[in-house]
Image (cartoon, rainbow, N blue to C red; front, side, top):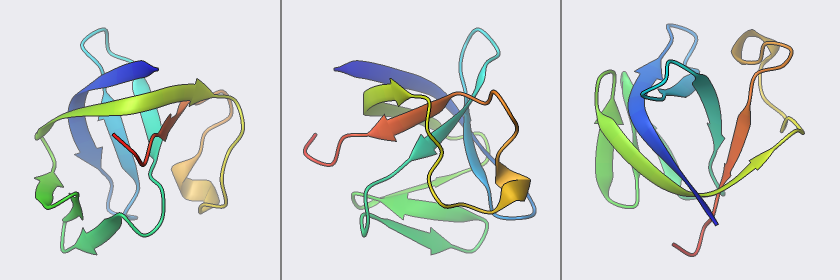
Length: 86
């Protein structure tokens, strides 16, 4: 299992990214229904995250994109599938 660590970035369109220490923008894909949108951030497993918040997620990298608005996905953007059991 891999670990994604970085800083949360949210866009005006409501897209969530994690900026890693090496400057890579990664799209986290959370298992339903573990994430709730909350204003300009989100709640995951009881903690609130927004722009600039540090986050650490367990899961794995993937190359497929889930159903999400096209404005949130750029071709070649790395996707990290968050493990629901961790």
